[in-house]
Image 1 (cartoon, rainbow, N blue to C red):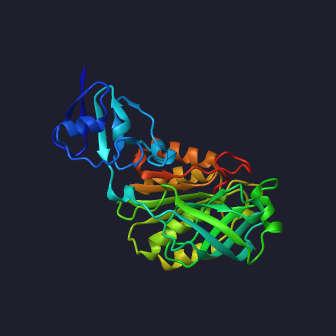
Image 2: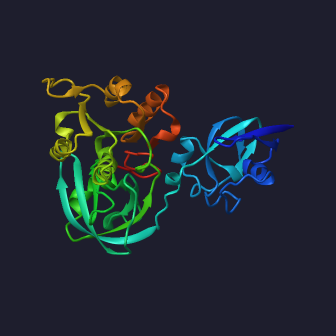
Image 3: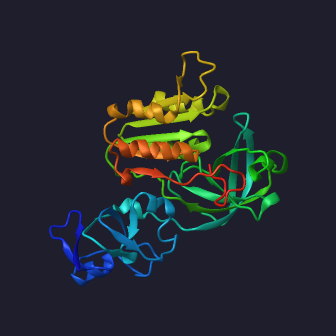
Length: 343
């Protein structure tokens, strides 16, 4: 049986045999399409799956990370056609790649910014230079638990010196041992960068940045980078925590808001027992849902606990925000999760 493949923006659909991969059909009919290995290992042929039935052959997660697949990205070389299919080429910003680095870093600062959130600042001593896109994360291996790497997002801008991470110290896990076992001057192994939820500078519409807890780290990096680059787009930052004692970094955020008229900061508390009228209360996703109709077209960046990210993703999708405009990397808070604890 024969089907068709439509590439969004191209004038004519391309015939495809049932079971043929998208890439095979496109190349057979002379359609220009980026590709390299043709075996699911390089990621060059990534594209967005718009509609139609496909069957995906095995591929490497290095070529297509789970976060990208969740947003509807596929590999043309590993996607067989089983109905009429439409795809969309990705923009150049979806192909951002930085050299992978393994670095030795020296601890410069350890400071509790709330009762359970630690700010860790380090200087790169070996293995640099380190380049990354705002919003990405790295794997940290602490000297007292070198065999248990943990994922944490960079909170600093790519053009800032050193590295900054926000770590929620959870009793019973690696992060809970940091206050007592990590000291100024200790060396930490840092590998990265990783992640696909990074700032897309060339997109249209407002930047919607939603953070839950230490998800503020990558959101801080994204918003700071956008402000430093003087992006003229409106920026709406929502920071959701449980109670007043969990709020941190507000002085900096308010200063940014004062200096940049295009930035609006919303701090939302889910615990309403101390209601005093100076904060928004409820779930941060409810606050976003309430404001969303007035924000126009948005490019969303989400970081925080899985339940918050999932709820925000579903809410934005239901409101008509395309999957390609919703960005989030997996965030694990359990101390011994298979994927590591990420902030």
